[in-house]
Length: 272
Image (tube, rainbow, N blue to C red; front, side):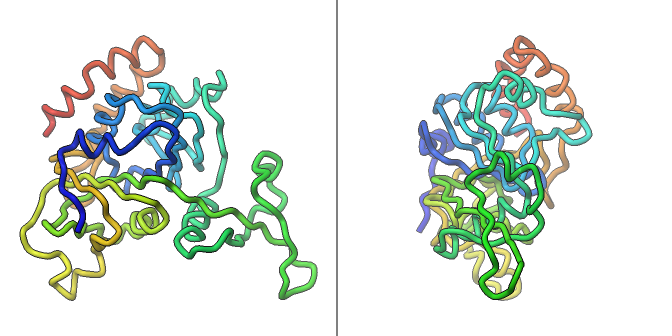
């Protein structure tokens, strides 16, 4: 059974040097947990974005907590580029492991399956192979003259995301967001914030059980109402586009970013 804990205790599980997998904005981003993690100040995190990140990753970069960033993109969507990410790339503030969406998913699936790598198509001839020396080209053993890329398994220490609800046993509803399950399967521990806790088992209903991550793959759950804000959460609330645009404008400079972050935790509490 997963533990239901206060948010601060959940955030304390993310420690310096850990590899942390986080989802794209459409999958349930744990922004309240991100604020709590920033308050804990873990250093040199290896952030694996599944397969991209936005405001969450930009904040962690801006706070100087990311040592390695593995991602296919960092974007604020309609609000434009991610300013702290852009500045960080220019200044060499972190090591960037540029990836593709299929490569990130394949690396996690390899970890889930317990195999050292997974072959994928579509990268042969790409400039990515010049920088991703950990990706290898091998000959397809079942066909002649068929080179294929293999990507190594990705083994996060922590999978971190936000979901609509968990039950008191630790089962978590993730709906159709199957990449969240992949993250949990591949990771050593899974930390999840939720909007609410229900008293009946989410696995009780045969029709909806397929959209539930079993407690077997969940380590800690914390209740954080509106815990994805200002990012949206499917079926619950839309993204606060005005707030994201405000962040994008302020974070263009280190001073503006610092001012925004000073009030972020307070605004998060008000939104809840």
